[in-house]
Image 1 (cartoon, rainbow, N blue to C red):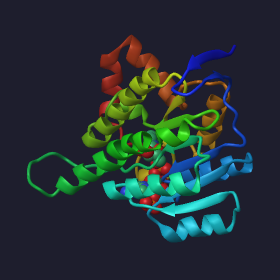
Image 2: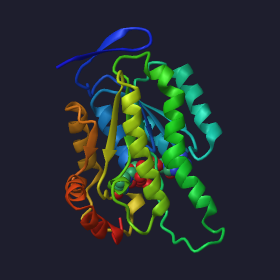
Image 3: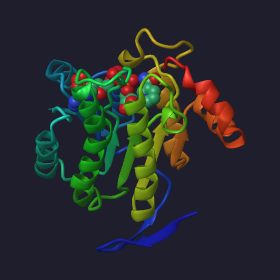
Image 4: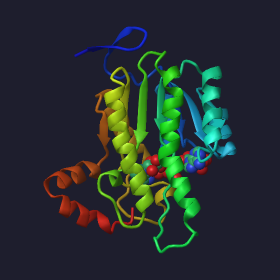
Length: 260
Ligand SMILES: NC(=O)c1ccc[n+]([C@@H]2O[C@H](COP(=O)([O-])OP(=O)(O)OC[C@H]3O[C@@H](n4cnc5c(N)ncnc54)[C@H](OP(=O)(O)O)[C@@H]3O)[C@@H](O)[C@H]2O)c1
């Protein structure tokens, strides 16, 4: 089925998402989930702008793959988000997909004191403020191109939190609700959200068990994109959401103590 919406300049059709021939910006593409996304989308004949702080990893990736363009950038710095926007507007005006994947998670206990002040600031900036600012900055570019698409990576912890990372969980819950609301505002965009279960990456090193691989996650993500599943619940998150619907108390009890 095809839907027709008006957007500022012209009417166009929204059809099923194509997973080839896009120009995609992926934040947090130096390792883990973002790196796997960059590799897979390149193999599917897309061009990719990769963003992260580690210049060497970005350069090595782009040296090995002509579809990949590196942009070193620290998203915890608001002025860096502006520099990224200017780079895209000048060098990649054909960008049609933004994947907000970069994220950090700190586990700490609220006991008072200033030791965690910077961590709180960085988690909220990287996980919440930067993606929102980047979306706002890039909408004018995205909407000029075919199939404008935004993908935000949240977490199962956006739905049911754990005890050990309150600010991380709060930032993911906020991006979850933001994504939903943005979808209402931008009916001429595809606005996706990925809610991963526990994935085996640097972020979860030494924590949890029964992790899935980044490859498994990206396979499910691409499947969801093709089917236009706007909220892509990965593996155990599907079950978690069912439990949370039936018994929120049980879901809280299950998740409170997890070491994800
Ligand atoms: N792993 C899981 O179990 C899991 C579960 C649910 C959700 N997620 C979400 O999935 C996303 C990817 O996580 P991951 O597991 O792949 O983590 P990861 O392996 O730790 O990778 C995080 C990525 O974010 C980038 N990044 C961090 N801080 C940055 C900054 N200030 N500026 C620019 N880039 C920055 C890192 O690049 P540099 O270090 O080069 O900057 C890296 O490429 C995150 O949003 C995470 O919250 C993960």
